[in-house]
Length: 279
Image (cartoon, rainbow, N blue to C red; front, side, top):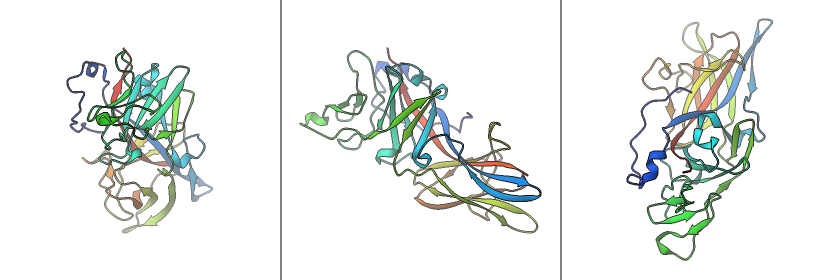
């Protein structure tokens, strides 16, 4: 997958810890939903096509293990951002591989004082998910091992259902709603027209639009507008390639409609910002 620009600076309590040398570089993966336009006998009509094979697709994100090398190894663990700069449970996840192709997904938001926890560390002296701000420790399933600040108790990390098949881990996050709502062909100025893709944006989400002529061809980024009739000013031809949502609500994205057939994909861009390998 292509890189989506420079990584923002991050402060972390791991700055002086030896396991920092095992951290992997940031990578990006995409959760795609496709809304297609199929030409048949000169009649163009819109059809909805979800290309992510999973049940309850509106709440599932998919991670291809080859895009997350740490998860190719037992006890490897990654932390990913879904909705940057928010402190809600589903904004960041920690995903860890256990023996026997079992994967655990939990929120990365510590339940002590909502600070950011690090991925699971399998070094012999640690073997836990750690929040170094106040000392909270959890096992890889998110159960509390040590409460923060020496307290007597605190809640476990929120857990999410996972499944694994054919090199892909799927994580169900109730209420996140990746569903595309609708698509319409709309005339703009002059003789031009465009497709308007409508979906429910989430505060903090970063979105792009891709196009593929068929479901077998790798989709490529295309230019798009952040409204139904605005200028096409996002995408590979521009400095800003994503639409960054600052609130939750209904959203239209406009794309060129000149393609005879194919699929447009609205993507939530999810970023891996830390990964730990076992010793």
